[in-house]
Image (tube, rainbow, N blue to C red; front, side, top):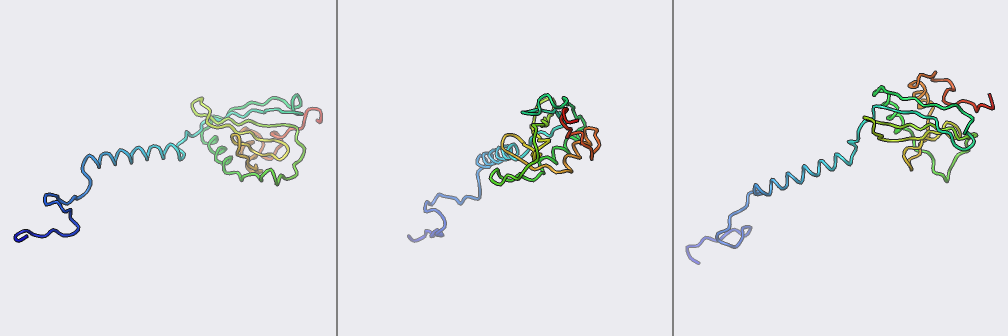
Amino acid sequence: MPGRQSRPPWRKNSPDSTPRTGLQPADQLARARVLVLFAIVAALLTGCSPVPDLLRVERVLEGLAVGRFEPFDRTITDPATVRAINDALVALPRAPSVQYEPFCPIAWGLRYRLTFMRANSTIDVATLEADGCRYAHIGLTDRRTTTESFWALLAGSLGFYTRGQDLFPLPSDMR
């Protein structure tokens, strides 16, 4: 058609269309809301769990240990100490699979239950074997191999000599 300018091929064919320069304000607001929601969900799922500030350590007796050891129940209230024990616990190496179970010394059933709390609400519970292979069980499925330095940290935090046997007493009938 004479007198009519041809449109560049990247523009729409409609003569009244105008090129878009970006998102419309309503689209930008919707996108911002989605991003904020995504950030909140990601923060909740990736470790914004409460940090424990209280630790209850109880001696738990199973099997042959029942009646052979004195009760033990102490609470650690120093938040820095509780965090140090919690950090050391989760840093322990994973235990070998049951298929490759090592030989373990005698086990009477002496255990310690560590209950990590914040504002009187339980955050996590771990069970430590104080005999046998001395594994740490975090939750139901996470099994770790404890180290001498971990036991020394726990003993020192409870006011025991870090190289002593206070956490590993002999049964009453063997003393």
